[in-house]
Length: 177
Image (cartoon, rainbow, N blue to C red; front, side, top):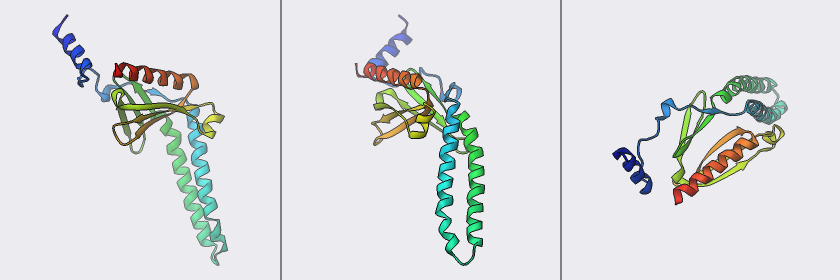
């Protein structure tokens, strides 16, 4: 056995972080289901319809100009947000590596979150009402090291969500041994 193999076995046994994984820059991410784009568009439209409804009391003012101005601002913001959201689903992605899981999101403000399997406490599969309509699920991983911080991977099929959950659980069991 080579010395490098002995070092890796030693590091795994004593849970010492090694630099055996590829860097995040060259990581290949698996994308979310294309139907998730529709989920995001519907959620965004519902949010802006709520904002438009909140502006209705401005109709009772003497000057209708404030109502028209508020509704115009809301309509422009909704259009800009819908364009961004319709492109954002392509950037969302996840990668399962030997020791961690990484999730990438955000077009305007990119964000990459990586949680090592050794720091995970819980993994669950969830659905919201709109995702349920499209038969999509999300996997939520709770990080016990950072005051219940979590990582949420949305837009997955049921099979893929359960597969990720099984992989994470098996890695958790392996890390505990």
